[in-house]
Image (cartoon, rainbow, N blue to C red):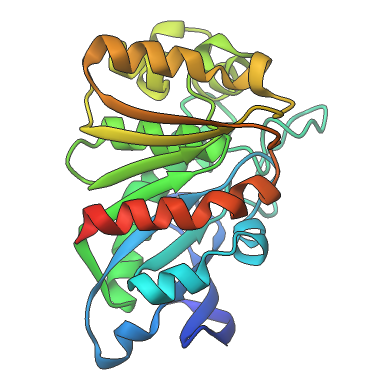
Length: 281
């Protein structure tokens, strides 16, 4: 497995990398960023936090604005942020050019509906190809993985963890889309990638997965109360009810005055990283 280095920068004693590689899963070039803290300088393998970004984002949003490096350097955490969709010539986009489907909006599913099924295989990429590549090149302890994400990426973190029990020692999310089958963003994306059969959507919907028996030990979710998407698209109360019925320990923190932006995410990023570190060992 090979990568091409776009940039390497020293930060908080560690190194921030941005790299590209050819993906078999998506059939395209993919970009991701990875921060390696100073504890890895002697070859020590370290726990990893996977961060999944939201609609319209690339790896760059959290890399530039997430304010995670100081905490990761202190805690000895590797932090990996992939792109949100395949990109490049021949990759289909939303026919109307909308922001909530197609490029930048892969929803972390493997599409089954043409023409998206050829390239939009973000579930396989995030849970299969990318971890194998990272473990082959960087000093990652794959027995200690955590996952988090924002909005669409929070949906991805929740659903991928529920679909892969035992893989992630800890799971958190910032303002996640918890029930895509029940909100406009998700209905459009799941219908477009998977087709009209709503029964197939349930495997990519955190609330539905929990209702159908999927379990994780605990979850941490932060949600801004001034989030412009809260009532229509995010609906954390549905996750709260599903976890209560299933006996999943959910810490849902409603944060007064915070919106959907990286001002919100960066404020609570260190809290999440410390919470993950305590569970990663």
